[in-house]
Image 1 (cartoon, rainbow, N blue to C red):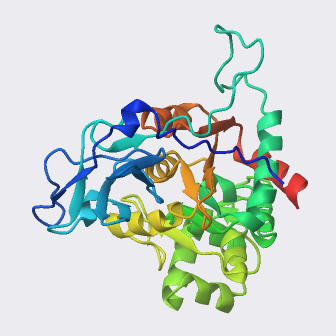
Image 2 (cartoon, rainbow, N blue to C red):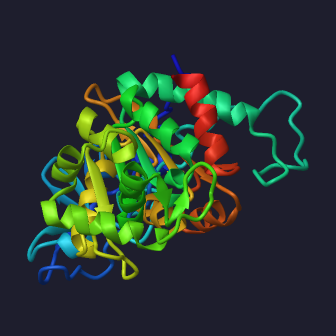
Image 3 (cartoon, rainbow, N blue to C red):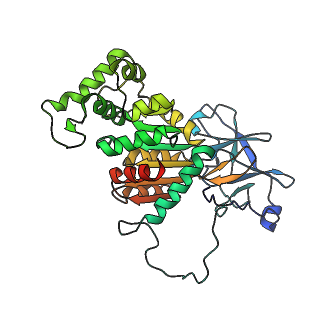
Length: 362
């Protein structure tokens, strides 16, 4: 069993919280238009005071959302989804003064004995050894395979190499993936590899250029569009290996979000950004562990809609783990600057990372 940090709820007997007023709401003035001084949510555990010492924890957090409170029912939604007259929570403070409390220390670990106030190497960089990060990740994935929801956010680099592509497929088959989020390119080049053994025209093992290979990804897009869907193309073309075929066999849900750069795109790629965000947000609401590999834009986008915690059916609160695997610190730095402070960097190439995981988990 992985060691999931215990959650310590706030002490609501503290004078500043015991004397807090009940939270206020104001009606939305129109669809997608918020009342003045609306409360913008974080990805941390947030409580609203209903009055009489009754504090309610928001169950589905995210940053940049708003709270809609109806009686004892509290929801966090995107501002664009607010409807006219929805009772939106209003407050611009978060320490109880207006009936809102943001609890930043619920998963804080006690300081180690003798811990120095000043120290070197306190954050992950390319000099950091990641052995402990890997061991922690193995424990978490083994736990969450049966007791959580593991979401992968993948860039196409994962399928440009034979071994990493095979490793990802093996992890899906072994039950370590409950949802896969990516763009058109990941699916296109995975299917290209299944059909032609190439990625953007290069052999996925030798990296040698194949004659005319630059057309291969367009050919597979055309083949899939001819058949109307990715599952139908997998079946009719007899594609048995790779990420998309493994997802199809295991019935793992996928969300393919389009971009302005896409060729095709493949059938099933969501080209409306709001629809894509809604589909991704559905998985963010359930995610307990997220692994984002070599995809800066997708990692940052999903990080923005990801809560820092999940509330179980029994009311147990646990952290959401977020691992970002990339060759540079940029993604994690950007996520930290945008509020995703729980993002843990593992700075390596995705091929080595995937093979490591397969050897230790499969």
